[in-house]
Image (tube, rainbow, N blue to C red; front, side, top):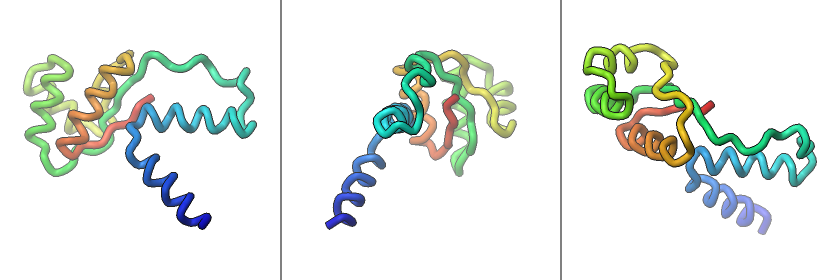
Length: 113
């Protein structure tokens, strides 16, 4: 019975995007006293997006980065070729979700800070 509950929770969590998972972890920490609510800052409104992995579709990733950043093709290629490069800084939640979706659909991976 306990395994079913845990598996159901894990399946539900796996359907969340990164921002929703971040919020879930924050709420979990507060709910169970792992972090005092005074130590937690007000929910973050701006995010920095870093490219962690390029995946197998480098050409399409370069085109997508070009579209997201408004850089030229050469600058976009350099950004993709640079490990842990900053894609966009101080992005609101909605735009962050859109960027994450575009990059992950191509096979890339990002980190949000």
